[in-house]
Length: 109
Ligand SMILES: [Zn+2]
Figure (cartoon, rainbow, N blue to C red):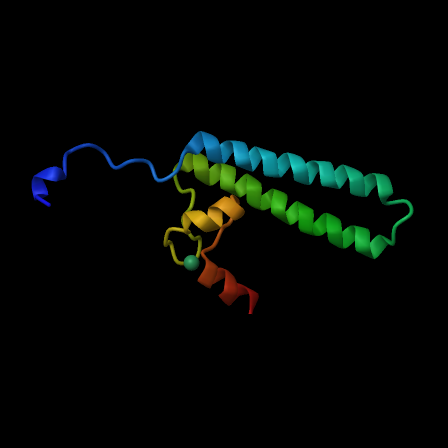
């Protein structure tokens, strides 16, 4: 292959921003719906359990908001710890992922 093949065109976007925004909105809506269900059931449920559930959902909601902000700034899909790109396959599963797999493992241990 000749080097002439490398043209001056800008690199293709790594992400389809609109698509990511939609999947983030979907994630947020489903978490907000979960919170409503939890609140409806809260009267009967054990309070500690309800509190833990709310906490984990709200943590995800914060991550989703962070992902929205990073998308706006063009920083989406970059690990917050090591600044390496987060693999697209990971973002497909977890569109609000803030860290690459190895940084995530390091944090969890
Ligand atoms: Zn990382």
